[in-house]
Picture 1: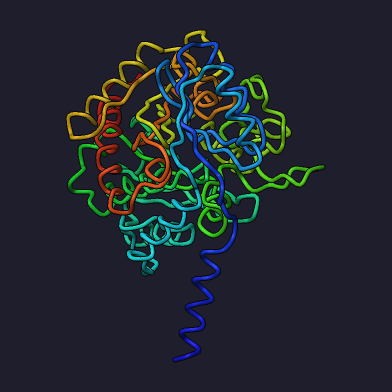
Picture 2: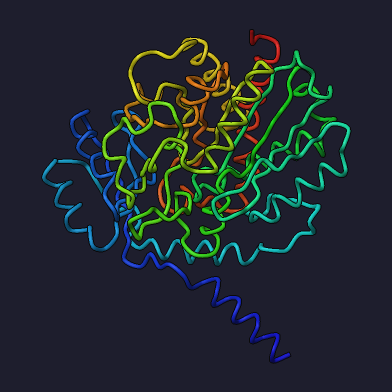
Length: 421
């Protein structure tokens, strides 16, 4: 019994140690002009500065985590620029410890063939559950090993179809988890997977003219690292040659106008675009899936991120309108309306650059501009707030967030199942 208590204590210590955010603060900053926004965003590439949420329109706030070494300099900058700001989180470590305390009350081990939405589960549970669906529902589920991450973890996809993947069906490609800390993103992908497979009879309308190819966890290395060591890690886990810095922003690494934005070449930055286009194995995998499927099918690509109530579409590097811009706007508004009518929040819909913030090298630009995908969008999932309620929705909120998001995705799938040509 003493040995068991000691073992549990060691496991607890191992879980609570690791990277400490003690002294880190989150500033909520609200630019009132484009000049202020540009000046603020110039800090995004600086080591020790981490934009949890970017300002997408004038009057919209940015949430910026700052390490202790940069606090004075950053606050001085804000005052010199006459930017409106306040401290949103006084000590980030406290919200990390609070999250762990809350999760410890609900955390449990699941059998490999089960999945629930009472907690955020790790890579092994996600993959074992997908494999079980393939075994238990072989008539309309196909699970594939799409490749391995930098650290060797298997990245799986699941194809869900009611008609053995009929060639005239629209294919919806969904992915999540390219940014490691955005735990609600893989959770949503797993949620819609479970709804379409285990609760299939309740969602047959979503499978009538539409097939679903879902990659729930694109960046398993970073995702695991956020569970074990550094909660707000964003990037992949590759070691950048010639430096001690690790990781690439996977959503700046796609080979479409890669590296064209400012300040993307610092390997220590949170938005480092990588040494070359598609340098990351995780990005290569999604790029290949897009290209192969677009050759065979009418194809839609939806990528899920957090946090904020946004539905975004290309382009992310220029103000020039994307092909089908008006259709993209209508489809985004259709999804936003469906979410709100079913009790969800109010989403804003728009082109990424039109909504103030440019981010070249993103997946939805690559889908539309290179892979041949017909419709491409990004969802920034709720809640739209700072601190723990940003990247850390409570476990009891997972079903609410996923349920309301599914109404929007369903609206897109039903509409494009009949109207995509």
